[in-house]
Amino acid sequence: MQAKSIQGHSLAEIQDAFAQNITNDFRPTLAIVFMSIKQDRTGICKSLEALGIQVFGVTTNGEFVDGIVSKEAIAVLLLDINKAYFNIYFGEFPEKNYRESAAAIATKALEQFSNPAFLVSGSHLETDAEQLLWGFEDVVGKQVNIFGSMAGDDLSFTNQFVFTNEKESSRGFVVLALDENKVTLKGRATCGWKPVGTPKTVTRSIGNHVFTVDDQPVLDLTAKFGGLDLLTEKSFSMEMSTLFPLQLQRETGDPVMRPGMLIDWTDRSFYCSGSVPQGSKVRFSLPPDFDVVDKVIKGCAELKATEMPEADAVIIFSCAGRLVALGPFIDDELSGIQKIWNAPMIGMFSNAELGRATGGNLEMHNLTACCVTLKEK
Image 1: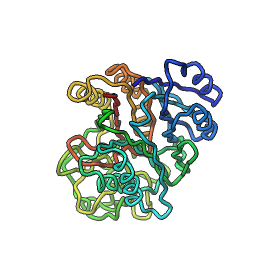
Image 2: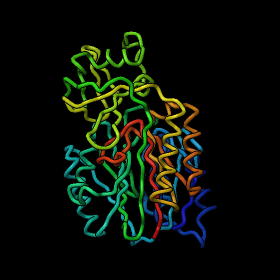
Image 3: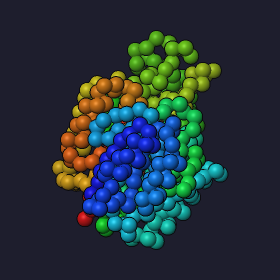
């Protein structure tokens, strides 16, 4: 499988890149498209459709190609994979029937491929992404190989989209199913935020709404462990939620990050981006330092050493919170990953990351870098 990664700040730039890169020796059949919500999705899809290329498309909070980060731009990974080895599926869930919708697509994929692997991206902030993952698991089995993201919108938190050649949705999901008998997909989800303090008990929560931890308002306890003054509506910022997230402890595997994204100031509770069950154990976090970057790079190096010595292409789903929290360190992280396989790489900053926690179960992650590698057999 050949792959080429391209980047541009307008439809015209991307079309020029298509003209320069698509030749008689390189005829791509599949495009992974990560792009700003401000760019022309319809124009990109029509251009790729005219070239006979199928589209897996997601709007982002920023995108990057081969370690080079851009804002409000377009990043495209072109792959010349055999059309018999993959299929694109598209679904919506206006009734919020996430698990059933995912199971229906997984059933179709299993009818086509005896051993399917998946890339999945969904849209809308209300979407319960873990229900999507469990829908695939219900059909394919606990061992299902799946990674992905939730779409972004340049951090406006208004409208996010997934799209393919002729369809798009702000409340849907796009799926790339791969025949894993023909194409190897391996991934690693790594966060790196260090815990602080002893495990605490979530004493009151409903879904992703956390009220109290150890019978204290969760916002006050977060401020205490972060060494912050009493937080007020004026002093709260996204930086606080990314620097001092909850770490949801699991019986097996690494903890899962659950930053507070929306505050209810009446009772100083907050809504996380994923579920935090009442009675579960959490720890608080220290602000990130360069060790966070180092841990991600080491995780990818270990993936190369143990499971994926060579890759035809690399796809990164990285949380937008990492971009906010790490600042210029994010360039070191991405360039470090790029050097490991030295293969064409594309990535996006997402609202959430989907995949299997190290040694654990399928989860919706936050503040996590999810590295996915592809290699044709």
